[in-house]
Image 1 (cartoon, rainbow, N blue to C red):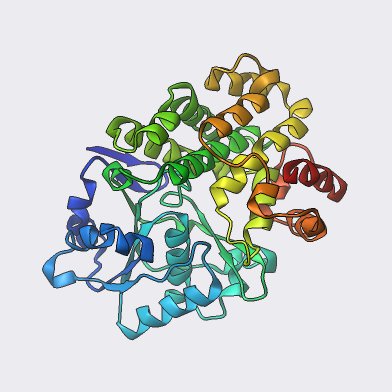
Image 2: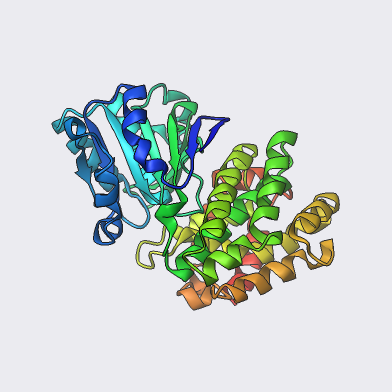
Length: 378
């Protein structure tokens, strides 16, 4: 077992979920809520985890997490939490389930409405308390099990960011066995989400050498060591799954330093409810174009990223990411995902005010976003 203490406590091991009861006891959670989604219920993973709860602490289950968490779903889960008299949360899933659980954690301790705590409303300082939470990731991508924030689509269509130190899960139970057999396309998309976190965190101008070093190690672990491609090619490769869960964890530790325009664009596109696009796939497809935009402003960091990737040179980083996306079976453009050029004005308006926009290494203008989006849409 690897016990990692950085921003929170992480229990990192094959079979780590077997210690769930110990972690509930450590946090004093007697009436837990399990937040998950229907996919994990259908796959039997939710039942596998439920079996690890002590008999006297079987959870109230909320299993209707949507692919991109919404304010409505947060409110429904929070109402169930209150009705059942729950006193803590166990989130099981990818970033959607964990982010939704963080929203529930806010409303369990603070008055509604949820939107008053979002970044766009300047509400982060008002998140003064959250319900205790154990996070169990089932994908290796978002790193939400160790991150300070959550992204939730509000009723008015905004995809807002919520962040506060108390939103970091108290304990992360990182069991790579839960990712065995994850479909190749989802493994690829979540893996590239992790790599984007690492890369954008390195490139932000915020000074945090420790976070930057962690980001570079995550890039090496995922790309140079070949673990991402191995996990996609063989879903039962336990070593590759372990290393990708580590890389995902590292990506979230790194982005305490901030993100950039890749995420600003992905957040803008991910809020298009009619398309229901996967966040990691959006990041992967947008990444090469944004890298080319940023490179002239941070040549030295591109040299370090190239070494971490084992790229031919700093000049080929974007091209090699593009080639990796193709090898992993990901789309080559937003156009393939249903995004059209008539959506550009709306996407530009949103990306230009997204939280991630403000830590891009090059201050991107609306005109810059328009140009990048035209390229990404193809």
